[in-house]
Amino acid sequence: MIYVLYYSSSGVAVTGLSPTFDIFKKVSDASDVTPPAISEIAGGYYKFTYVPTEAIVATIDSNDGTMSNNDRYKAIQVTPTDNVSQTIFTSTPTAGGVTTFQSILNAVFAMAQGNFTRSGNTYTFYDDDGVTVLYTFTTSSTGRS
Image (cartoon, rainbow, N blue to C red; front, side, top):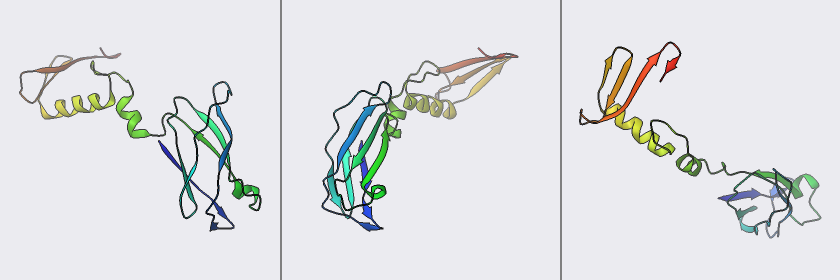
């Protein structure tokens, strides 16, 4: 995941900085983690790349002593869910025997393309071929089973 920072002083972009992490720690146990390098993009924008496996808190110092503390220091948190699309397609919820969000969406799409039948409290959903059973749900007063 690429994280982007913006540095300005009194509203004016600051370039040519060499920001570093003062703090880069796990939230779970406050242990130190080796921080990534920060590089300049342009126009006051800087970036670093990191793939967190758990929540990290950090303080970044621009290392420019002429900046006010509000402009000089950035406090951030990075988490494994920052990259939402990656999280959605690799997380492991389960529904109807499938185990990734993408598989669940594919199954729902397949159900929407096919037909379903109802017999009493039982609903059977078919693939678009009208023959292949995708899911069977039985409802009751306490929910479905």
